Length: 309
Image (cartoon, rainbow, N blue to C red; front, top):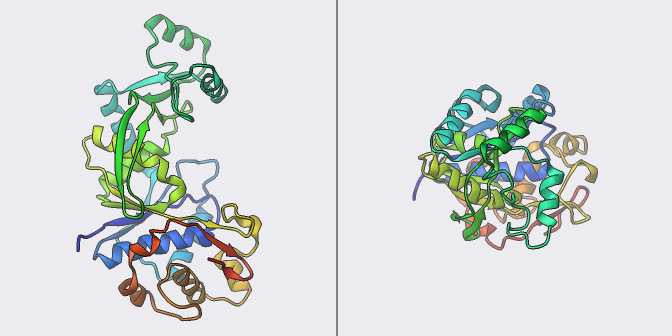
């Protein structure tokens, strides 16, 4: 069996809920069941929302579930020089250009008749500005973002759950107007430099995989494979969130459920044990099979009743 070096990469903007913890469990099981490394990365580029106390609580919760990791915790906020080097590489390849479009302008362009860009894609407004047009934008003082020049290339990725997934790559942002490096750049640089072979994460991020695989390739890296985990939904059918009630490890502890019980519930929702059983993390590693995820269905979770299937 091939080794799958994996990672879990939460944003420290709040406590992890049961959906996050379920994805973390799958990522850990996938890595450990193949003899791979499991790495911990904190995606804290958003300084406005990231808090050290949230990072600390997230790491405590993961450890309480028995999910250990290899090496030091890596923080994106400490790696900006690596992202700057990647942008410089893209600039040397003439694969980026400045973009002055606001979100409203992009939305209006996409809604215009005869628009050629796929839905949600950047329509290329700033891709071919001449020097005079760029100078005019600069003189107005609006800060520019930096976009890649992908030119609507088709990119396919391999997903352990859904198989081959392909999409058109638009000219996405790699550095925002305020100088912050974008998620799509940072995650590619980090996964490549940490030698992550397979990215395990929630399937709400599946649509970004072709962009990231394309960017990895043009930066000279081998793109990872992917395993996108079906989401956990609340009783109302929307993505599980704090509004649904007792959805964090601390919430469950207040109701008398310790971390072993929560891990058991998460494992049962993955078909790794029967409801009420309390397998150890090591026993779950032996039982893990990614084929159990291949129906692709989201899981509905009632904070009172537990997993509803």
